[in-house]
Image (tube, rainbow, N blue to C red):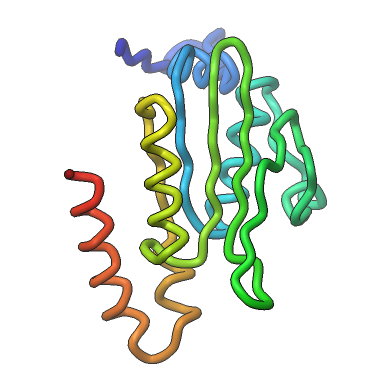
Length: 159
């Protein structure tokens, strides 16, 4: 892949996020996995694939919406009383973005994601983040559990 870097050296130079993102991610399959922080990044990413705009605060705060900026809610996964995650997808003739929201970097739900991923074509880009949720929401052993889960996850990706 050819990487294009824009410089701001001239007063006529301008940054065009949509053009840059389109150039970098043209004909790519992108998988984004992570917690609620990552969800906001993904929402902006999908919009930037279409326009030179960021979402408004009210759009970023939406939860469980069926569609936003052309992405679609594919599946909601429940474990007991809590929503354990959701799967969203944005698809055009030029990009496929699949988004998995989860509560931990590795658990039974992540195993399902990895199984599901093996049915899809191999992604060109995988972006994952769950560290803050993992270490702040699961009790006094959460940091140790995060380290163990992360090692397990890395082993799964290297198989």
